[in-house]
Length: 337
Image (tube, rainbow, N blue to C red; front, top):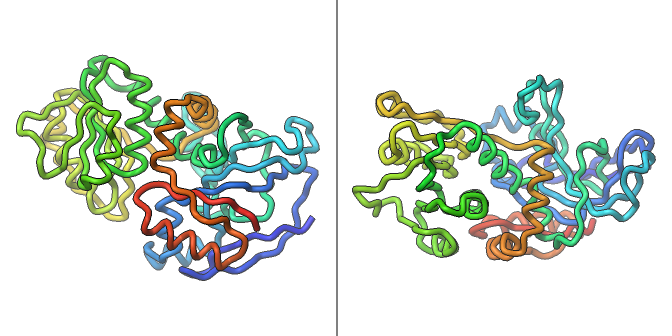
């Protein structure tokens, strides 16, 4: 069976790779919808270090996608069944460890071909079935699972005083984290801190929102989730350390290409815990699918999901990346190649 893979060979340049699929070993899935991540945009625009681009490319982009089963010799999935695809391929995971941190793990669209293919072949344990969830929403399941993973780790590590929880950032990840926190911690006050007043207006479901340059002098909270990343990481982490109560936990999710200076004196004096979180595993994908069945959660997600035109050829791929570059939150699109 011949397959077409749409690889980024240089920034803004795609090429089609033809290869054969072995239908006997894996489940064959046809992607239906995809979503663009900031990491995809950085590769597409060439905003990674030149040495990294040389190492990673050529490579098919996209690690957020849902599709339908075309063939499964094992019989575990039915033809036409809707599934979310898991991009993380762990190596050996020791008891008590998370699969997304296993040494030598493969992550699709990060050095390995992502889901921009005509067909995707995956082991059955890298698929999570779903039904009664719109495809536009199901395609961001990977993104939701990252938030689920961070909150699961927070639950295990943070102390029991959770009266006020702060979320730093006003982007898509901050929005998802805030949505999940409102569902899981009904008695806690959830506050969101960001730089963009328009984007903060989308967070109407939380208890309080603040602009970073208008923080109250007496602002205090028990724990925090940092979802800023890039050049803003330093300022976000610094504000969190300054305002968090003693022995609080700060979950760090923002990705920065540069090293970030951290105020260790106050971390030590306050006895703070900083936890880095990245990606997710199958358990979190399954939890994310369950959250996506929640009608309130679905409605809130739809507020930040913007559907671009369907992709039918390489020219359309360029158009959706240009569309996403101007979008405040999440861009999804139908994959019709």
